[in-house]
Amino acid sequence: GQGLEVFDISNPASPHQTGFQAGILNGIGGSSVDVSCDYAYVASEGRLQVVAISTPTHPRVVGASDWVGGENEIGVAVSGSKLYLAGTFGLSIFDVSNPAKPSFEGSGGGHPGWTPPCIAVSGKYAFTTGDDSLDAYDVSIPVSPVKVGGWDGLGNPWKVVISGNHLFVAN
Image 1 (cartoon, rainbow, N blue to C red):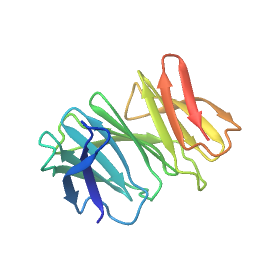
Image 2: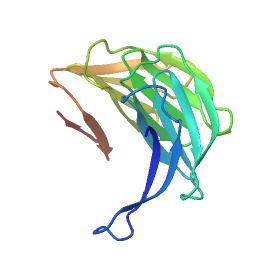
Image 3: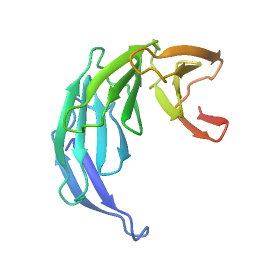
């Protein structure tokens, strides 16, 4: 079924499901998850759900928020008390300092197209990808993220990761 699955990988030769929270997803596919401390943040089709995972055998939804521009193709990243969503709707920022009540702070940009958006965050910058492009945002003022740069010619980016001063894009 659809939901958040938790796997025990302490024995890599024999991973097994230890927990499942049904009813997380609003529709089919297109969901993304990131984990910070004792919470998993699941985004799908206009809905962000916060799942307590401190007891991996019994994950449970503890908070949720809807946002404008929901869709199937979403990238999610958590950094500190901020959660960043990337999609064709653009970049949206939420305050998740209270996991039970994630609150929308601001948004900007956009990526029309079919390639699933990706996002990576480092310090005061968020990097998003969409069809053929990379955008860099200054997110130091969450209510008003500002695009500070970009690059076209990526092909079809599927995953981005930051290490030090380098951004790696798989396409």
